[in-house]
Image (cartoon, rainbow, N blue to C red; front, side, top):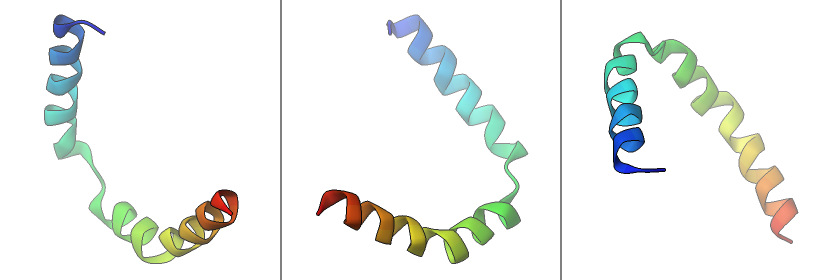
Length: 45
């Protein structure tokens, strides 16, 4: 990916930030992250 494409993605990420549903993010972090951690540990072993 070149500089032009990287800057375009940066622009999308910065401006899309305001469209993030923080309630959904919090739900994922507080309920689903533990299961992901366990699954990742099992894959690593």
